[in-house]
Image 1 (cartoon, rainbow, N blue to C red):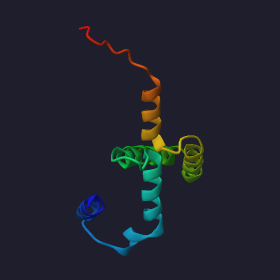
Image 2 (cartoon, rainbow, N blue to C red):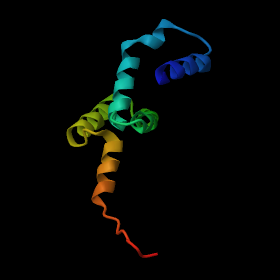
Image 3 (cartoon, rainbow, N blue to C red):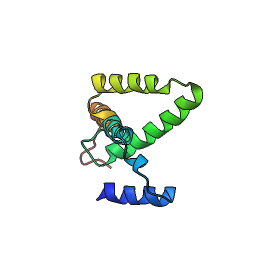
Length: 105
């Protein structure tokens, strides 16, 4: 359902429908976004899309070989944080022990 809504909003934003929007690279971007954010929960692809768009815009303005840098980031993320950025955040919050006060105000 979310993919259908986002696809229809994308077509409304572009004001046209073209077969060029359905190429292999668009499908690859969606997989990369899901892996960056973490596909085990709802917010993973949302976080991944923000990080991916920001990194593409920043790196492409900085250098012309931005795909190489994105690929390196992607490989390092898969090797060291297979749960994505949201999984990393969850792991960090589980390691931080917040003291609980039972019966105390």
